[in-house]
Length: 566
Image: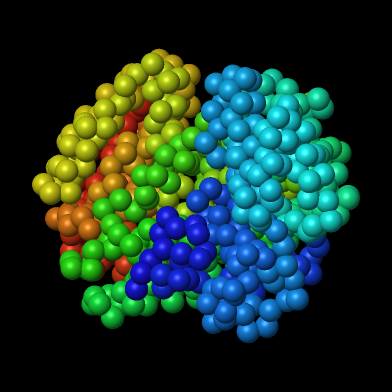
């Protein structure tokens, strides 16, 4: 089984016999929906391959390859009359530097120039026409020139990553963003030229992919010809994988290794599932992440990848996390705290963004939703409830939360120290290094306003420390037979640990401890009793590697006691 991880060229995937999940049935649905459409999905979700599929289906130059590329697929069995009827103009806007206005303008203009010249060459236009494109002084002028030169033809315009540089620019400099996207900006002028092309009929069809609707909203009336299909239930499954599609890719692994499909799909669901792009639809898997998992699965040892998130994807998401800077960083940080503490946030989702009116909490939560950092989880009257979709995103949140702790309090938390503490836990059943690091960080924070110093905030700090190591699958307050232990550290492939751990945290304020001398002991006894009750649960009783602990703290001192099964 050849896995097309990292491949976005449809012809390569099909001709070289890579595994392909057939999404061609959405071609007909897309045609029925309208001529000019945009479909947004999180980064690294399979958008480019979908766009490439459209390219080869509609490209007039690919007509001779139609049966090879599509004959065995759904659309090939029942093609639409429009297949291979267009000249395809393809644009993409990744890799544009945002250092200053001049660099953005230059890179954007070069992208347009190169794409238009490639178009003219591909469809056999005379080379004498090239200078007209090159000499046009603006990106909008270049598009206007092409439309004039191709009058009478039918063009299908495909735009990939339409907002890639703009999202980065928004996080870096809101005023700069407004200057190029707003009225009089060169990006807005460029899309106004495209709009003119659709009105004249030269651009007969248009399909755009990206991550957020922010650029579309900023262009407003300058580019109001597209229908946004992002939240349309018909297209929930167009990009990404369904559970059935994911199982079909995982099934061959069960023929190679003594693993059940149920165990594989459970793990992959925990890590990569949870994305809802409309109400009352099934959750989708991140297709790139699923393909990464299968490609990096060690068939010799039948073990999972050491890193369940590809570093390239982690880097992309790290850049997107810079968008926490948009608006009021402290207010955005409170949303993050709420997510990590409570597991959800409630807000009014935005379908449009208007930066001239400011950027509030609802805007920020909605932005997280479009980026894939939270997922729709139902309505609460007039508002929506959002949750963290999966373990990958949770890891990224806790990595960012650690950075925020360090930045806001001018302290350093050593990942090497945490790794050593986790090694001591995993191999030697020794919790002392973790206790020492937790105590050190709490003392450093005790005189600051960062932590509110109640039990849930201290637990969040402890979990943040643990998330800096990939050795365990970490669960915070998991539901186990209607009980909720604070922290579970469970073994995960490919790491072989000698000990798993249950940690119950108890907090006693220093002021209360001084007033009520017995309160500390009462908290300790309460924790010991809770842990004993957890150890009797069927799901924990049969875990021979499980060690259990009560961790007691007043916000500075940390005391840990091991609990043995009674």
